[in-house]
Length: 272
Image (cartoon, rainbow, N blue to C red; front, side):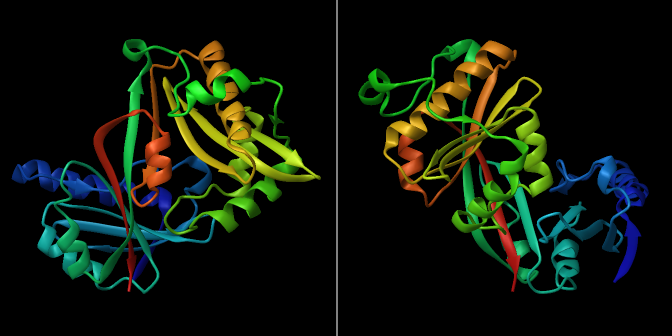
């Protein structure tokens, strides 16, 4: 396995993209938002073949993430075999997942899948919507909970690590959480000194990403945090789309979230 710094991978990315363009071939990839200036010095393991580039690095949550781009899926499948056990690969697609068999032939097993639900706030309105709105809204109190402070980041990270799957759920690192907290994107509720309910969101341009929620208290507590966040976002940002990714096995969350299915999916695989 060869190594390069993450910032140097782009020359190889351009090479594969140019080949695909020259051959008029469809290019498949899971390179979305993996790169920023803070990570450009990270060392990547990589393989490059005629039609495929694959590379991986250990992210801030100590998960080895694998990225690829290829216009020959048979070749991609063969190259996947060379990566070690435990590596994680995720793939976003609209509609049917055409790459599933190639990932599996390369030694990867699907460990989770997520469906996206979204709404166009311009078309559907800015009101906060939940399946139990009629029941809980009369109890809504905007003073329930508080915005997290930077000192809460490690406690929140530990809680997320307990509740969610580090490999599949893209849990933010402590540093990421500190950034979210600075941006006022994290609401918490404490009981007896411990965080018992939280809601994390992000603003991505004009998109409102409803990210993580956890609640070990009556439903009204989380409802208050989510509605307060929604109200603050509508007041302070010019957002047009609100969306969530929900684990397809989490039927309770799928029922509770009344946004619209938009036929987008994330599939997460682990090397066996």
